Image (cartoon, rainbow, N blue to C red):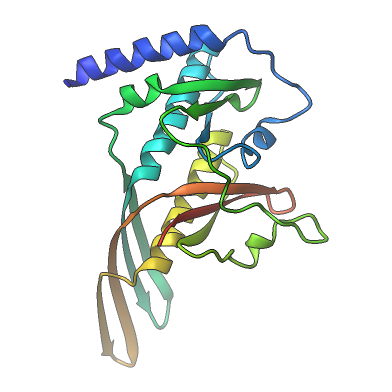
Length: 253
């Protein structure tokens, strides 16, 4: 499918879905972040989040696309990470560069959207739209993990990774961005990178150390690539004290 036909197909499907759901009545007692918790739904239910755009139609469209992306990412997520550092003994860290990217197959996005059933739409003045959808092509199963909390009300997975046969868990965090969806995306990406770090060692690493006039200089280059299957965000948590968003992710072993 050409790029133009792909965009048109996506737009038509989104318009159809928006027209079917804009009459949903939001429940004001829950904020946007709490609505992102779908742990009490079966595993074929996904949540999408937009930014606070100018119209409700635009917000719902972006939220639907966000949910559809989660389905494609679950199928396979490729990560590419590169790190370069330079250190000098008399001055410490001189330079630091990090380049990270994630890729997934979106060629069937239009078909995925057409299979979605909207369960709930919630509008928030700061976060935009939260859309909860069900993928009718998947069988609904129980979630693999449900968060437990300590006496302070914080999830235990902040300090201890869950253990479950056949799965690997990772945790990521991010400071507050201007928009909520950007904050969560950053935390989700950090969790994916954590999973990659736990799954594999650095595929390529080069270190160069030189000594001159009793000064030591050290440069390091590391490159890492990997593929995560079944990548899913299991839970999220916002720490008000540190203004930090946390994501718990899981992938297949």
